[in-house]
Length: 159
Ligand code: ADP
Ligand code: MG
Image (cartoon, rainbow, N blue to C red; front, side, top):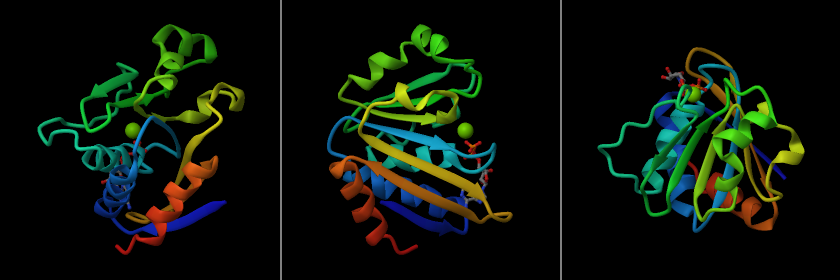
């Protein structure tokens, strides 16, 4: 099932991430796609709050490092594949190992990888710029548990 909503400012996108993060109980892969400036990093900032990453950690796009790791209720790995050229590169940064960990792995520019590279379960979130501060967000859950996670988050979301 696909869920859709609109955020009207960055705080709302952060809030959505935070509310989703609070509901996460174990390892989960979150694929994020959308143009530059669509709010992927903004969403992950909220996600980090929901996972109780300490406030003093600044969540910034790991464009050059490719992967940033944060301690939280569940460890958070923030990945940005913008500069990735293909699955071979993903090997070398150790992306596959992350999928087997009891961690939340949030991946910007997920479209850089093939569909078959991803775990069978998890979330995919698409952000589209719809105005200066307006973002259309579509959320998909792969597997029952992921679908429930999104449904509960969206149903209880009142910005
Ligand atoms: P990305 O990681 O997708 O490149 P960022 O999260 O780094 O995007 O940047 C999003 C930019 O858009 C920020 O400057 C943010 O303030 C702005 N913005 C405006 N409206 C929104 C919104 N509704 N949701 C998220 N970001 C927004
Ligand atoms: Mg980013």
